[in-house]
Image 1 (spheres, one colour):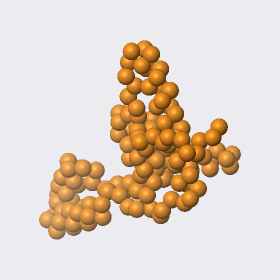
Image 2 (cartoon, helix red, strand yellow):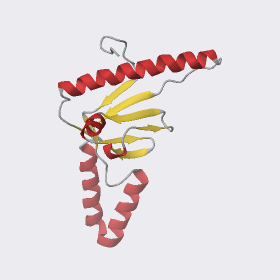
Image 3 (cartoon, one colour):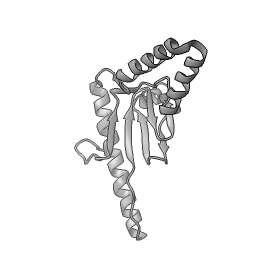
Length: 149
């Protein structure tokens, strides 16, 4: 099947250059509990040190950039975009025949780890769908893993 030059889906979100960095606090209440424990166990100076460490982690940002994708990865991205467009066309037509509307999922491309509404996942889980955010997650290295096995 020839796929090059065909329509690609607009529902592709590329997060391959972004790797989630988890903060040690885990959120507002977590920060409060950690600082309170540090204060009770070590006093005001200990609590201030913990708070400073949390602020430093937050300033580093929620993501860090990875290296740029290779040419082979870009070709795979386009291939996946065409396959997704094909599935959108087929399912849109099937739903229309039933008098319904197909809600297209978004495809999220990632490297190594990704944060979804279903939680943190790494590439070892393989491609997966998260119903909470209605997104499909795919690490393009999955294709390389298939080839090598």
